[in-house]
Length: 108
Image 1 (cartoon, helix red, strand yellow):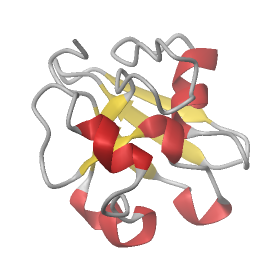
Image 2: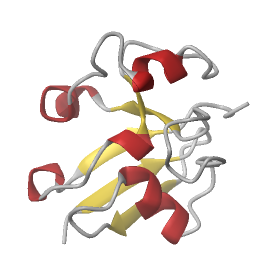
Image 3: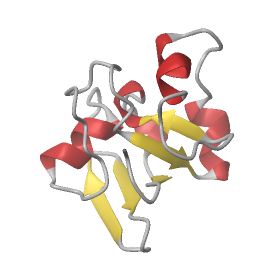
Image 4: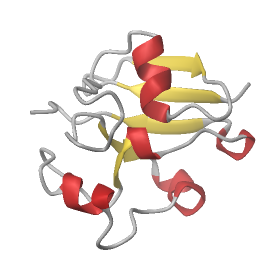
């Protein structure tokens, strides 16, 4: 099972086994990882699962498609960066084993 490391804003790390096919957001919610609120439950409608994808993973994970619902929702997220993604839109695959995502200081 792929491991995803969630890094809280304060540096606390959570290495979680996330089943293939689940979203990065769901992996955090299922394991009570602080920093991912997921207010809409993964419907890409709130931007409270915003994460920063570590640079070595950007090529594999990719960026939101311009004009997509995710790109639009990121405009509502706090403190976006070029490596921002909504974790509800990142589906876990075997290729993401070792993925590292970092949470912003806040989701609201």
